Structure formats: C-alpha cells, structure tokens
Length: 113
Length: 113
Image (cartoon, rainbow over all chains, first blue to last red; front, top):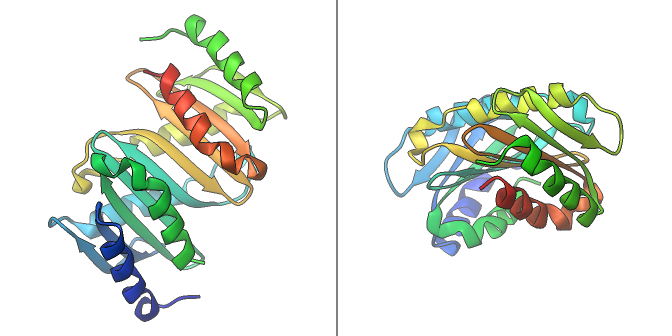
C-alpha cells in the first residue's frame, strides 16, 4: 500500500502531465486531507469530506460489492475519485477537461493500486 | 422534459442495444421508482434511494455547480446515473461491461436531455 511520501511525486507528475487537471487531493478514507494542490484556492477538507460520505453509501441491493471509484459530472466540470483500503485520491477537471476524464481516471487508479 | 411514457420505449431500446447492460431504472429524483427492468431480481427502490442520497451531496467548495451524472465503479461492475430536473435514470453493468461504460453513459444522457 502506497504512503503519502510515495504518492506525492506521482501526484506532481499527473498534475504536470494532464495540463487541464485543476487539482489533486490525497486524503484518508475518512476525509482527512494529507496532500492537496489546486490551481485556485479551495477548501480541500470540505471536498474530501463530501466524497468520503459518498463513498460510504452502501448500494447493497445491487450486489456488486464495494465502491472503489467515482466519476461525477457537474454543471461546470468533473470530480474523479479513486479509493483503496486506506486512502483516496481526488482529481478535478473543468468543462474543458471532458476529453481527459478517462485518462485522469486511469492514472489515479494506477497510483492507488 | 420527458415523461415516463416517453422514456419507456427509449429504455427498452437501450436495454436491447447494449447487450451487457444488466438493468435500467427510471426514478424520480427523490428515489421513487417509476420503471425498472433488471436481468436478475433486485430491490430497485433501495438502489434508487441510495443514488438519490448521493446526488444530494453538495460539493460546494469545488465551485462547479450541481451534480448531474455519476459513474460508480464497484468490485464487480458499474452503476451509471444521470439526472435532470425531475427524474433520474440508472444503468447497471457487470465487470464484463467495462468497455460499454462510455456508451451507456452517453445514451442515458441523451434520453435525459
């Protein structure tokens, strides 16, 4: 399982490689932020808490196990979240990042393996 | 805004066109199910309630407006949900439906316009 120290340079790399990526946040599954970098100032804790809450939703009746990733489409962009046993990483894209949703999701899944 | 009667044949069409699609559920935004078809018996109401709850999560700090679509990756498949002002439609895929996630999302967005 990757640690904050191991993940930090990988997040830097993704942020520089995907130029439309507006931010990345690494947090514990309970929403406690470990690292965060966004192009505009925003409350990383508040965002991580909301995502943590969403991940906790049980969709038992679907009978497909636990949720490990989410791609949320908003009026003006996208939020991508990938979790593993302990940590979750969030990525933010604006409307101009639509074509990079798949790429960012793959990269976040890769580093959270 | 489309009604249940207008949407029913469109849902039938998607279900038959995307052979890996395991089910579609049309519900009001509060989670009240209007139509549901799944290849195995499951509690559509319970699933729609969970998704309704997730859609209600406000991620205000991200400053990107309201959530209108979600793609959730689970241990054994995917749940796709698209909402408009009054209704939401949910689509279910198994692990074998991974390559159809984008297609199903587009189709659900199309009929919910």
